[in-house]
Amino acid sequence: MNQFRTLQINLAGLRSWLVLLAVIWLLGSIGLGWLVKSLVFLFGLLLLLPTIGFFVLRWWLKRNLIEDSCPVCQTRFVAINNSELRCPNCSEPLTIDHGRFHRLTPPGTVDVDAIEVPVSRLED
Ligand SMILES: [Zn+2]
Image (cartoon, rainbow, N blue to C red):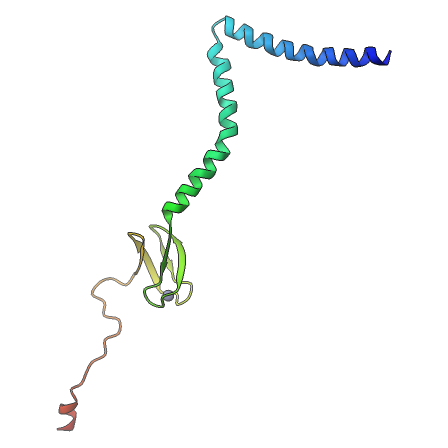
C-alpha cells in the first residue's frame, strides 16, 4: 500500500514533466519554437546578468576611479573621474582632469605670492 502511494507521487511528478515537455513540443510544432527559444534565452540571461553586471561594474570602476595625490598636501586618495571633490586631508577643492587631480582655483588667481623687497633699498 505504502509503495503504491510512492509510485503514485512519482507518477504525478513524472506527469508534470511530461506535460511541460508536451507543451514545449506543441509550441515547437505550431511554429512557436522561437517562444521556447526566447524563454530559454531569457532564463539564461537572468542567470548571466549578475555575472555581466559584476564585470561591467569592475570595468566601470577601473575606468572611473582615479588614484592620485593632492596637489596641495600630497595625500594620496581615490576619487571618481569627472567629478569635483575636496581633499579629505586639507579640504582643498579639486577637480579631476585626464586622470590627475588639479586645484579648482581658476587660472590667474594668485594664491600666495611673497613680495620680495630688495634689501638694498631698505638700507638706504
Ligand atoms: Zn590635500
